Length: 350
Ligand code: BGC
Figure 1 (cartoon, rainbow, N blue to C red):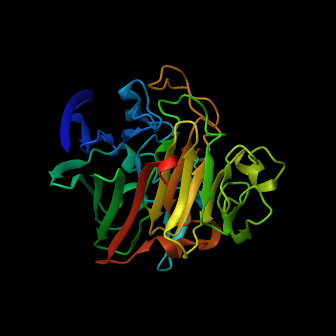
Figure 2: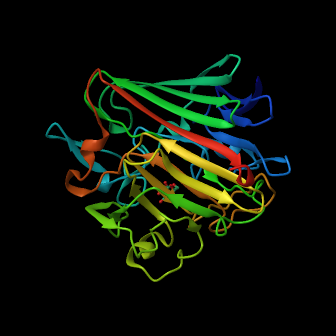
């Protein structure tokens, strides 16, 4: 196990620090105190080569604006809030609109752009980091002082766990996720269209043209959204389908089935890398980088469409007329508690 710190000065009056957590095999993560951004998840392939399986900006300064939310903690609410408004206890809440007509990813100054306090801990079997942030009453329009604790844990089984905890002193809305873009080929060698994906979900959350839920759940069978039998991400992504047209690819929430602990599996056959995802979150947003930004990646080139897939385990996002708002309500004094585990292995070992 090892913990390292590197200091990077990119923002006035606040030091941006990069931390490394590793197990004894070299598996692990690098992350920033800025937005809790995960810049690297370092995973061996079938030959033992350790490479980064998430998209990373070449210039760490890009994380100050982080246009595509690479690797970041997203909050207070991940995804869109329809028209930047919803109701809580019959009170109308309004938020800044930073995603067209909607509010997105917690607003223009959401958690992605905040400095977290970081404490690292180590024992025989695991190494972890506690990232905490105090979000003041009214921040980005959300009621209540909110104490947020996020824990990143690495263990000897090549598992990376994110635990999300939050408590508020008023009723409020909370829906936290992480926005890492995965590509198991390592150091962005190829796009994700040949990765195999399994998603343990029978229902897609239908979106309207403004990319927010209509309130309807669509049965995935016989649609491009059925990943109950693993298939290549590229197989149906360009099919003529009204839901695919809305996001110009996958950019949708799936309701996760209650049955079965394994919620998602991503496989890259050539490298042998497999990632299994376990979570107690109710849904997952999958976004296939349909609109990449133009900032250079760590692998020395600009990102292309479908270079990676963001796997955002979260509550269903909030649609018009309070659709699905109930999933994101955190009552005063109650604890919000979610976790997602990313477990890495090699295909032939299974
Ligand atoms: C959203 C996309 C958005 C991306 C980057 C994803 O979570 O679903 O629509 O383009 O984040 O902000």
